[in-house]
Each structure stands twice: as structure tokens, then as C-alpha cells.
Length: 270
Image 1 (spheres, helix red, strand yellow):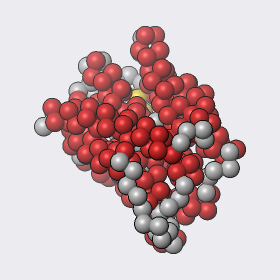
Image 2 (cartoon, one colour):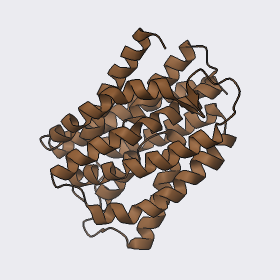
Image 3 (cartoon, rainbow, N blue to C red):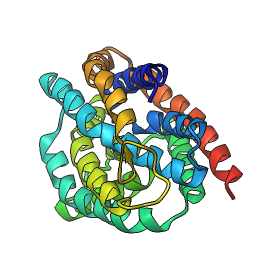
């Protein structure tokens, strides 16, 4: 990788890290389109490039999530019992996604799934769908099932799970700042289980660029994490100062643009 490419990806990582702290996401939703575009410029085929972008974005979350959750924990916003109840399901769903489904699905299909799912969630957040006042979090079994869905879908789109976790928790009447902080606590287990699965399922694949570890492109991962881990705490502090409605609108607007780009990418491969 040339120094110019490293600096561009490092800048993307810095922005994604800040947004990870601000919105409770590990930055994957922001990184995927940039990595996909950069790999295409390096001559990597689109089918393989989309998979590598998703896997590499997820791998960066392993580091970014630690920095983000520490910042939220210091602010006292993480609901740790809720996060702990979601983790077993997260592990199961992540392994199924990264080891089995990911290796058997086409890159174009992944891009379209990414776009449609993110677009739907963007509308839910942007238009501020109101939950029923009496709705509460489910019990341990229910949270385990939700965790499986979070790990599964996160593994298919390369994100830390906040695009499901935050809407779900707010739907269950958890305050938005607690929902963002609690979703950040799930970033590490989601990223770890999925990253290991991507390495395993992509081992020995032909056509991978230099520096690849399975589907994970290590140079891009290092470039992005070098800055994202520094900016995530800044975003977490900023999250506590923003009004709830503005926070949701920021989340929704960003997801709409990302969904549009990835939908176009996926449809071009069909």
C-alpha cells in the first residue's frame, strides 16, 4: 500500500472512530463503502472486494470498540446486565454468518442485503418511530434470540451491531444515550467472533491482495485502527451533549447515504 492510500484510509478510520463513539457503532457501516471502493481501484474484483471490505471493516472494530466502550463506561451509561444477556446469542449468530453464510454468498448479493437492511433501519431512526409506553426489554431467552440476530446480520454487513441494537433498545424504551452506550459494549464480541470466522472462511481463497489474512486485508485494518482508536472517545463525549432527536437524525441520514452507495454497487454486479 502506498503512503497516500494509507493516509486516506487513516482519515476514514479517524472519522469512523469518532462516529463509533458518537452513535455506538464500531464504524463498520462507514468503512465498508470506502474499503470496497479502494480495493476496486487496486484491481480487486467486485465480488471479492465487497467481501473483503466487510471483513476488514469488522476486524477494525475489535480495536475501536474497546476504546469506545471504555469512554461510555466512564460516563456511566452502559447497561452491563443487558449487554451480558445478549452476548451468548451474538457469538452463535456471528459464527453462523462468518463461517457458513459468508463463504457461500455472492459479493453482489451481500452488497444489496447490506443496502436494503441499512436503508430500512435509517428510516426507522430518521423518522423517530415511537415505541409503546409500556414496552419493556424481554427476558434472558428473548435477549439471547435477539443477540443471535444481531450477530448474524452484523456478520453479513460488517458492522458492530448498533444499527440493530440501538433501534431495538430504544423500541424497548431504553433512553437513547444508554442504548448507544450499551450497543458499544457488544462491539467487541461481535467483531472478535466474526473476524475469526472471516479469516477461517477466507483462508486459501485465490486472488486475495498482498497482506490478506483470509478475507481480512491487514494493511487497511492497521491504517484505520491507528486513528479510529484515538477519535472514538471524542465521539463518546460528544454523544452526551447532543439532544436525542438530533442524534437519531444524524444516525439516520448517514445510513441513507451508505445504503444508496452499496445498493448501486451490488446491482452493478448482478
